[in-house]
Image (cartoon, rainbow, N blue to C red; front, side, top):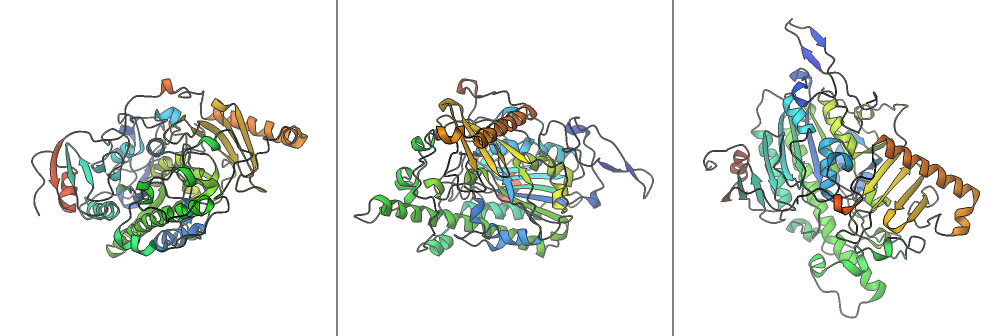
Length: 531
C-alpha cells in the first residue's frame, strides 16, 4: 500500500515517565496488534449516519428546499466536503464499505447480502486499540455486530414508530419515533460509558428512508409546504435511452399509495399529477430530514452541556445519495450526480473551522479516517485514504482526481441496470454492460447530465469527443486495476448468499425504556433491571 493511505504510526507511552516512544506498527497486521496512542491525547469520535439523505437537502450545501441549522453547526464549526461520493449507492453495500474501507467486490457485499462479521473492520481495530465502541440504530448487514462493546440495532430496515431493537441474545421495543429514540439511546450510551477510555460511537438513523414517516411535530411543519421543483423533474431522457426509460423509481409512475399517504385531488393528470406527487412525497421526506437535524441538535447540545465538545469529533454523512425529483426520479442507485453525492461534514479537535475541501473523497475513506484520528495504523487492506490532512486544511498534492463507482443489482428492486463508471472534475463516463451502452457527460457545460455525448453517432465521431471518450475509458480501466476490480459479482449467479432483513433470534423482552435498553446492550444473563 502506498503512503497515501497510511495513517500516522501509533504512539505508545513508555515506562519512562514523560517519555513518548514512537513505534512503527505493521499496517497489514491484524487488529490485535493495533497499538493505542496515549488516552489523554486521543479524541472521542461520534459518527452519525442517516439513510438516503440527499446532499442537496442540507442548507450548508445550498439547499433551496429546507433549512438544517444543526447540521450547519457542524459545517460552520468544522469541515464541509464539497465533493463527497459513494462507491455503490445502496444501503447494505455502503455500510459494509463504511466498516471495511473497501469496495464491494473486496468486502464481499455487492448487493443486499449478509456481511461476514468475522472480517477485520474499523470497529474491531478501535476496540482493540483502547476505544469503548458502540453501535446504535440501523445496521442492515444481516449479521450480529462485531467489534462493539455495546450494540442495539434495528432488525433490517426497522420501523418508524415504537421500533423493535435487537441486543445481544434478545429483542425489545421502545415507545416513540425512531429518530428520537435513536438519539436518546446515543445520549444514554454517552452517559453510561466508562470514563477511563475514549469512545467511538456509530449512531445510525433510519430516517429519511422510504416510506417517509416523520414525527408529528415535523409532519405539521411541512404539511402545507410548497417545495421548489428541480429543473429536470420532467426529464424525457432523450439522449439516455439505455437504462432510464425502464427504471421503476420515477415520481410520475412509481410512487405508491403507501408513499403518498393520500389520494390526489380529483381531475389531476399529466404534469399536474406528477407535480402533486412530487410535493406530497417531498413534504414527508423533508419532515424526516428535519427530525434528523433536530436529533443532531440534541446531540451537540448534550456534548456542550457535559463538557465533551472540545474532546469529541462529530462526523455526519449518509449511506448513499438521493434523488429529490431530479431526472424525474426518487431513490438512489444511479451514478448520476444526486445518487453519487453524499453529505460529509465534521467538527472537533484538530479540525479547522469553516473550511470546504474540494478534493474528491469517498466512503472508502471513512474507516481509514477514524483510525488515523484515533492514532492507530491504517491497514493495507483498506482501499481508502485518511481524510485527516484535509480536515486540518491541508491540500496534499498527490490526492486523487477521479472516483470509481460500481452498482450491481440488475434489474433489482427498481429495474436499475447494473453499471460502473468514472467521474473526474469535469466529466463522467458510465458503462451499462448488460445494455452494451455508454454515456459520457461534460459536467462543466451540462451539470444536470442531460446530454449524452455518445448518443448521436455523428457527435460521438467528432475528434474531440472520440479523444475524450478514449481518455475516460483509459482512466476507468486504470481505476479498475488500482482497486482490483476484475468484474467479480457482475453475474448475479455469483452474488454471495444471505439476506439482511429480519432479526438474529433471541428472547423478546417486550417494551423497555431507553435506560433499560442500553443496559441490555451488554447484559447477557437475566432480564434488564427495572428503573
